[in-house]
Image 1 (cartoon, rainbow, N blue to C red):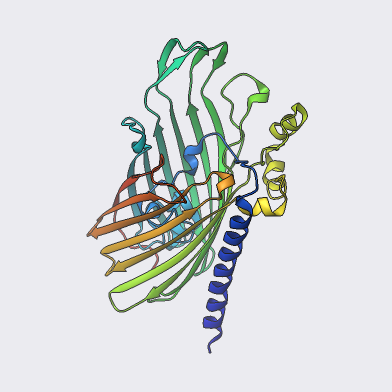
Image 2 (tube, rainbow, N blue to C red):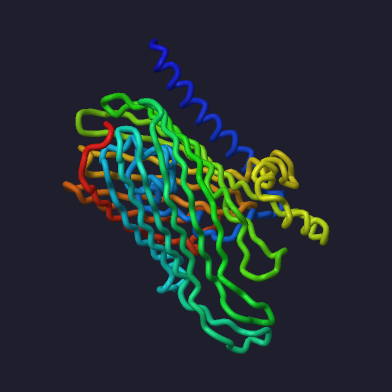
Length: 389
């Protein structure tokens, strides 16, 4: 048997074993362990920003590159087939709660300006609708329209025919309240962060093979909404690992299966709520908190494993014109309990593409939750030119 096939099978088996091990440990521990969710400011940065990934359980680190690649892995872009592309996505958010004015809009694009180099940019805008503020007695004070946005610019290049790397710099703006409310003066919060990414392209000339990626995203400063120096919040620094196997069924049909693992590089809240414990938690250094986040869970290694979020997904393509997708997202019960199936379709005609995804929550005893019926709509534009095949 050729060595390359043996290596591919070993990698696939390793991914399946890792998925099974994490899932089994989470299942055993969930029933007895206390809820201890790792929280951050600007959760907008953790919401899947495009319909293609949304249709595959938020799988995106190692999928083949498209116009939304800068949201997931900058290092993929030098391997894109189109020299330039642009995408726009609209997501009504928390629609099942009856909110009609809460939505997320994203834009992303890239341009390959050399054979092995590319630049990219993306924008996220989160409109949280109108909110009525009240005092402690429940009396109306003022209305406000919270909103958040982030903008990033990135650079990526391929180091060889199989290896790509990328970096990005991001500015984050979060305006959740303004003025003086209940004796506290609020202001918009700002932060600066960056991404480091890696991509392995193991596809042959037919499109068969393994792709893999690793991304450290949102590595940056903390954010504050008041003048209180102790009131700074962590932003969602994250480590993501992904792999996708691509198979060619015949001359017109392809299918791919993938797995992403994500873990917030943010301190786990202490189970003890003593002033000293809370002070130690809130005042960790930014860089130190990234590394300590892999070993600070009060429940030890077993709890650290439960902080991994798992995305699995598949994509079928017919003649690179029609796409069908499905996926599953899993988060431990004690770490947020987000679990859902998703599905989606895509159509591409000439230089225009359209993607749609739909989310269905799952879990024992769950019929509805705030994420029910979440939909995403993406338009993709091929701006011309041939990229790296």
